[in-house]
Image 1 (cartoon, rainbow, N blue to C red):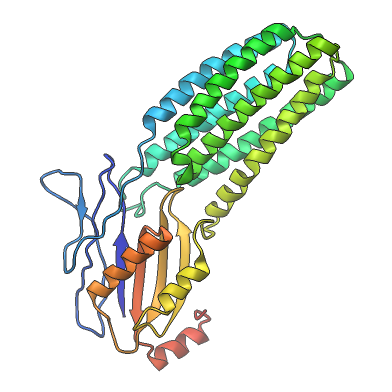
Image 2: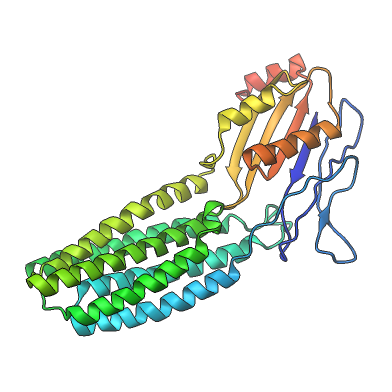
Length: 352
């Protein structure tokens, strides 16, 4: 049996690492693997040594500065909004402030997870700590729905006992919210396409900007009509908007935490690509899962009756998996389809 392990990653400084196929042993009983080694001169690149060329992959974008700006802006605004909401008796402002504070906690969770995901693998955590980013995204989604429950509960109570709201100051504060949340969402827009945590931050900020716009509209209408019930109704609409925008985050983070195939990876297309790549006769034990909100891993057993196709072939396959399917970390085991081995696998229930 032969295997190949191609690792596309980056170090703490965000430098790309290079993967070289490494082949030990003869054509019928060895295992091919790669193991990262740090260069002694400290360039921050990891290398595996052996035959073949380089397989390049760009490291994840460093979002530390964006997270810091987002947290600072939203903490300041949420505190001002909460104080103003209590003072002006506006549940819509208080509800939005509570949501903004939950967003801040979510941003801190995501930021911590992104930082941990850059930690190097260790003997105990051989894949590193990238999975903390998935757990943070899940915790963020759950936190949002808990906050929604509190907002809905309070809004229902306010429908029975409406309170007078100073519409002018409410409009001013909500307009400030549109500017702050819109700017923060713009900061996260680029990374939202590749990272689930950043996408969650982007969606929350964009939703908050829309919610603030709703607060402006309801306060203006309340000032004209005197309909006090508009404030709690707006709060309920806010809750629906947040739930709508957050549901996908909850589902995606839950699926990734259960080792589901990431949504952007077509497992059938990956299986077809590997199965029809000469000299592969068939494949089994194909597994695709997320190592973090950005990195995807794959393992598969490829049956090649003519024997190991060579390190250059393995490198090309891993490069194409990365380019075509965004799979960063591929481990391929080569088998010759020995009849006795296949029969044993079937008796053990391992063949699938």
